[in-house]
Image (tube, rainbow over all chains, first blue to last red; front, top):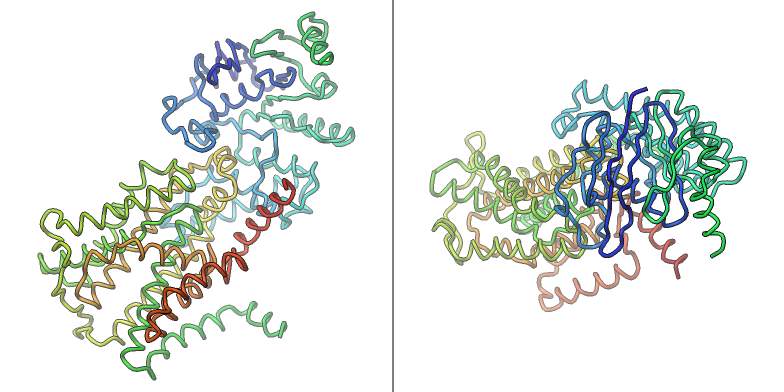
Length: 270
Length: 327
C-alpha cells in the first residue's frame, strides 16, 4: 500500500513549552491509524498541525507525496485567541477533513445546514450566479441539498434534518460532526477523540461507523482515549508522551511495550 | 389573527406587492418637506442594508461606514463637475470606487476581530474624512466640499423635484432588497452564516473565511458608495461632513437597534434613528436625548433589536444560556 501521510521531525514549541518534539510516523492509504497517549501528550497539537490550525515550528507534513502548503509562520496571527495561524481551508480542499475534540457544530443551524457547510469548497457559485440565479447555480444548490441529505442518511441522522444542531442528543452531535467532515469529500478524515463522553453502546456504534467510513475508501486518523476502541479498530498505533513518540506498531506490540506501560501507569499514579 | 398571518406567510407576494404599492403611493399626498423626509428614509435604509451585509451577515464590526458613503458621493461629484459626466452615469463609478477602497482598506485588517476591528474601522473612517477636508489631490474642495453638481436627467426629464428623487431612490432600494435576499440564500450567504457561528469550524470545512469576509466588506462598501452618489444627485452640494463619525454611528445603530441581519429590522431601525428625529425636528434640543434614551432602553430590554433575524436571535439566546451555565 502506498503512503498517504508522512509526518517528519514534527516539532511545535509554544513559548517555553515543547509540546511536540521530533515526532515521525507514516500512514498508509486505507488504514485506521490510532494516535494515543496520556493527557497533555501533544496529540491534539500534532492533529492541529496536520489540519493547518497550527504551523509547525520545525519539520514537515507530506500528504499524498506533496508537502502541505503552509503560509509563513506568524503571518495571520490573531491578537485575541491566537488559534488559527494558517489556512486550514486549503488543507481541507486538499483532502484532509477534521472534527474537534470539543464539539464545534454550527449550533444554531439545522443538521442539514451543518452538513451543507462541508460542501462549500466542492461548489463554486459566486456573487453573480447568486444574484442571477443561473441554471448552473440552481443545479448546484440542488446538488448541495441532495448530497447533504445522503450523508444524513449514511449517518442515520435523517430524522434530524430540520432540527437545530444544539437540540440533538450528545452522541448524535458527535455523529453530525463526522457527517459534516465527510461532506468535504476527504481522502483522510481526522477524528479528535470522537468517543469522548459516549457510553459503551454508543462507542460500539461509533466503531462500526468508523469501519464503514474506512470501507467507503476514506483513511482514518484517530485520536482516542478509549483503549478498547483503539485496540479493536486500529491496525497501526502511534503512542506519544510528553511530546515524544514512545512507541509505534500493532495493538499487541504497543500493549506490551514497556515505555507505553510506564507512561500509562505513571498517569494512574498521579 | 394567526390564520391571517398564515395567509400572509403562504402568499408572500401579496404583502410584498402591497408594501411596494404603499411605497409608490406614499409621497403623493405629501408636501415637499415630507417627500424629502421619505427620500432620506430610503437613503438610510439603503445605507443600513449595505452595512448590514458587513455587520449582520458576516458579523464584523464596521464603525467607519460613512467613509464609503462619502467616497461614493465625491466620486459622483468629481466626475460630474470636473469631467462633465452625466450624474446617472457616474453611479457605477461610485460603486466601484467605494468597493475598491473597501477592498484596499479592509484587506490588511481582516484578521482582527471584535473590538480591535472596531477601533481600526473608526480610524480609517477618520482618515478618509480628513483627507477630504485637506483637499487631497486638490479635487475635493476642502472643508467646503463641492457644489454645483448637475441635476440628473432621466428620459429627458431633469430630476429636480423631491418626488423624482424619491422614486429614483425607491427603484434602487427595490433592486438592493432583491439582490440582498438572493445573496442571503446563496452559497456565499451561508458561508457568512457559518463564519458568524464558528469561524474555526467554518475554516475546517474548507471555507475561505478571509475571502468571504472581504467580499462582505467590498459589497457593503460599494453599496454605500451608491447611496452616496444618490445623495449627491439630490442635494447637489456635498461636504466632508458626509463621512463624519456620527454618520457611521447612526448607520451602525440602524443595524443594531433595528435587528442585526434582518431586512425588516433595517426599516424599523431607520424609522427610529432617522425618520422620527427628523419629524420631531422642532423639539431640537430633545433629539439627541431621545437617541440616547432609546439606545440605553433597547440594550437593556431588547438587545437583539426590534425586528431581529431568526439566526441572530438564536445566537444571542445561546450566548446567554452559556453565560448562565458559567455563572
